[in-house]
Length: 226
Length: 214
Image: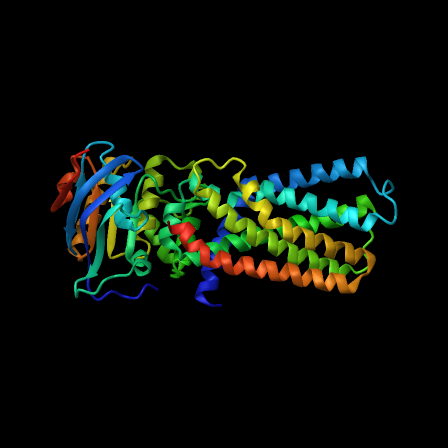
């Protein structure tokens, strides 16, 4: 294993270990996701939507639940370092790219854990029929990466702000909106069996996540150090 | 492992000023410290001692002036390389409260690319007076024990330069004696130490002084 990767995994491992001991972000993610899912399944349930509208509307609902749960829990990675005054030593101990990649891995693990629990529950409770399950997993994985990479850099930016408040949501929303549109398209496609739309949507999601990864990697050292 | 340094590192800062918007913290501060010396930064509360230390760390940029880190041979040390040779203890910089002392040292060791054997990490904890077998997270430590862990963290990578902000605060008399001996040994070994303090005892450890007016 390369030294850089070992350092990245050290940051991610430390964050996961502290998170599993405090469960602040996990609780926020899980509570928001499960409350929203319970409300949606109670009010709409598996039978209230017409068969024609189901794939699209259920895709929208699924990504709304994932998106807002991500906003509720993924802002903690950098804010916690600043609030607990551990950011200073981390800045001195680790290279900026190591910190960025470590936090990205941590956020990715959280969002993937959330999706692994939420997506099957959603499909069962809402009666959301997926005709291409592995392609659905690919959409979720690509979406998870896109969400993680975007929320990681936004979390780093807002951690430096004096008044954080709703800044995380305000900054994340315009960056994530195009991603969400393609994720909804891709999820609708795996429900209807539209392979061409799935393929185009996945490519768009991966492209956006790729661009965001490059921009974040270039921007993060400036945000973190200055 | 951090590559061995052939010579110590000196710090020179010239005409350094720091201002936040219209609030001037200090202006036109200059000084120098060479390997084998302790530079004291003194001044009343609010005079900017910790701010100057953060500037010397490279964590803050001065509003004006320059800070240079040079090896004895005269080569300048880059900002990226600088952090590898720097150990810091400051009240504003905490270790992770959710981790144990040994987990903290393990993390800083891995993230610095050292991957020190566990025996060395345990030895360092014993050296600063902490029990390496203690499984309590740092949250359950007394302030003195947490301070000892911060000192262990600063010494972990055997740094050429130590920047210390009131390092003996919260330490008991035995801890203060131990710290004085450690700093004496490090200075005798050619390390560079910068010490921000108002403590009468710590002020006797220095060979040079920069006084901030406040």
